[in-house]
Amino acid sequence: MSDLPPLLRVADLARVLGLSLHGARAILRRREVPAAKVGRAWIVRREALLAHLEKRERAERAPEPSADRATRLLASLPLPRRRRSLPAL
Image 1 (cartoon, rainbow, N blue to C red):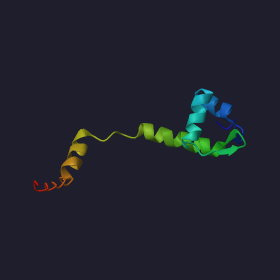
Image 2: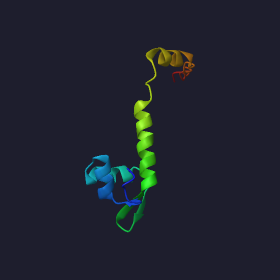
Image 3: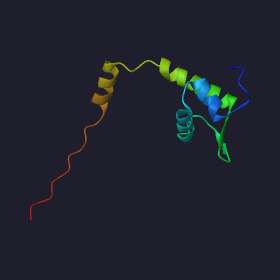
Image 4: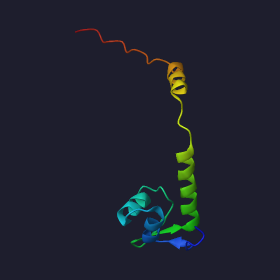
């Protein structure tokens, strides 16, 4: 990844991420990767893209919570209070 230029355009981002131009623009609009819009062009810093890729890789490697842990968590939550009904008119 060190062969990337310091500033990337949408086409560069799409190539690195394996996306279409439309997909790369969608990621930028959703602010998943920090970028700046200069006129009509998006500019992404290489460091921001590398940080995004590391973050995405960590999220993919993170273990999913086990069912037992989720069940214990749900059981520990307080039950919602019942609303009192209004008297009939």
